[in-house]
Length: 328
Image (cartoon, rainbow, N blue to C red):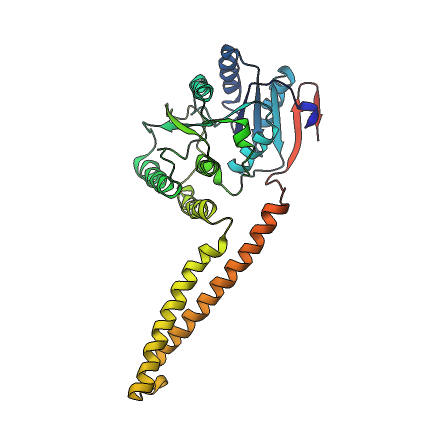
């Protein structure tokens, strides 16, 4: 991407898109108008996440006409987190703004994010204070997930789920995104001491098309929260994570064994006649505890390898498109 690198770019706007042909042109027009009004030297980075409609062609046409636009074409549909990571890696701006490409995020609100960055904050996160989503399918699960994420991470924001955020370049460069952790970027960056603020944003009903999210996303968030807890508290010491469970299992096995042996030697009670099932449970708990310890030790070794040698991307780019050129 060296050919596309530009100096003194103030702001990069990163927008992942998947089958958004209905709104791509309007999104571009509104983004361009808003960014021109800021007076900043900007670039727009559209990441096509394996769209199967005309989204990519529309974006390529836009890029051919506007040298402030870069289109990142992914080889297939990787998902929102890899698409954002591809956009972040492509961005050259000192401020990086991410947002959805379905016009549920109003480009006209970008200046509010820029104001907070200029005030000294490292991360500015949008807050859909007045949600327009379905109560049962979206609002209640979202509130529960946000409450849990806040408690787990210690970051007191109300809305982890929105993509509409702004970052200082130096803070986002410290982050490696994996899985579906894009919604928890503020929590992950908080571990690096990032200064975070939340601002209310409009929650707009999707103007065209249909949402790419379903109820299954809610269940995936539960696993993401477990991952978040591990990453924030134990990624550098996985043995501590598995070790606690191991100690509980071994301690329970020890108590059961003491009770069984006490009966055996004090009251001469036959172990397998009187305490056969309990002895089996004690043996299983001991084995489970040892397995957890072994898993923790393996995790420690993998953690060392990860932090010392990993530089693997979680996406695969086919081309970068820009006015007058395409780069494989």
